[in-house]
Amino acid sequence: MHPVFPIAYFGSVRYFQDLARFKQVVFESADHLPKQTFRNRMVILGSQGPQILTMPLEKPSGSKTATKDVLVSYQQNWPLIHWRALKTSYASAPYFEHYALDIEKILFKKQRFLVDFDLEITRFILDVYQLPIDLSFTEEYEAFYPEDYRNSDYETLEMDGEYNQVLFHQKQFNPQVSVLDLLFCEGPIGRKQII
Image 1 (tube, rainbow, N blue to C red):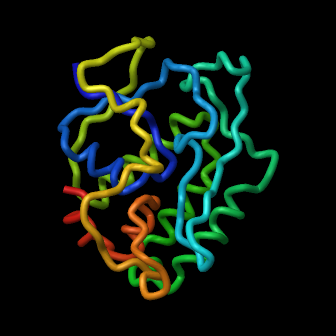
Image 2: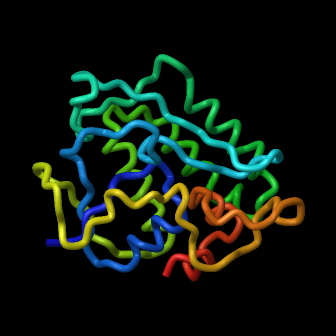
């Protein structure tokens, strides 16, 4: 069996560092989606420090909804809010303009299911960093896997290494932000931080 990971909404650098250790990864999709998770939220750096951006969800079967059945809610215009926050935080980053259209396209695509949305994001990041990892989903829930990353708290786990963040001169290095921070600040060179 291959390592099992949770899906992530523009996951942390540490999340991608862990993914990059493997040639094949399985994403958990049969569990019940836990509350307050990076599966639908990311942390970016704003002028006031870390800022959490959360994607609203709909669970058709309430708390018993399997992750694969969780829907992305568009009752609010959250893609616009997230896009504006990203532009405000990273417009001056060296590689923002290079990747802005791709990120904007992903955000405004209106995916129906959370797993499809997060999978598209993950594939984009892996493609940018040239990480050929085969991705698949679990078919049914299992409580234990030999290489189980599902309960890793990627919002608090620190990445290995540092790089120049846009607001680095104002604040200490923040190692728990979204991989978008690395992408906008370091561009393709950020691959060195991932592998």
